[in-house]
Length: 254
Image (tube, rainbow, N blue to C red):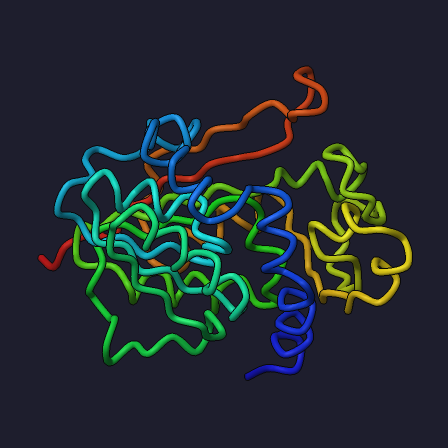
C-alpha cells in the first residue's frame, strides 16, 4: 500500500463507526430510511442509472454504504471498495438490517484484485469526493477501466474543481491556485463535525486536487468514451458550481 494510502486509511478509521452512528443513525434506523425510499436516498445519482436489477456495480470509495445499500435494495449486486474497516462495519450492519446482500472489500483502490474483479462490473460508480485522494489520476482511471466489462459504464461524481480556489462547500480546507499540482495535507471530510479536542487528534489526509481539464483528459486518455459531463450547484450557494458528474463508457471489442 502506498504511503499516502496508509495515511488516508488512518484518518478514515479514526472514530468513523461512531461518527456514522451519530450522523446517519443506528444501522437499523438507517436501513429503514433506505428501505422506505431507496431512489430518494440515491438523490441526483439515480438519473445516471439505466437500470438496477441484476447489474453488477462497483461502488468506489463507497464509505459507509450510504449509496451501496439503496442500490442493493433496488436489485443490484453491489461491491464496495473502500479503505476503512470502520466503514465496512457500519455498511454491513445497515445491509443486514435491510436484509440485502452487500460485498465489501477493504483495500487500497489502486490494489484491487484485478484477477478477481477485472471485466466484472456493468457499472463503476463513485460520488462524494473521491479523486483528490489519489495522486496519479491516470493510474486511478486505469483501474476503473479494467474493472468494467466491455460496454460498461463509469459514473464519476466529484467535487467541482472550483473548490480548489475557494472553500465553496465549507469543508474548511485551504484554497490554492486553480492550476496547482500541489500535494498537501488536510483534514478528512467529517473532521469538522467533531469536538475541537478530538478534531486535533484526527490524522490528516493527503490530497491532490485536479482541474476540469485534467479530469476529462484522464478519462479520455485511459480509453473511455465520454458520454456526459454535468455541473451541479453547490449546496451552499446555488449560483456557483459545487459538484460535477462524468458518464463514460468502456467500448466493446471490435
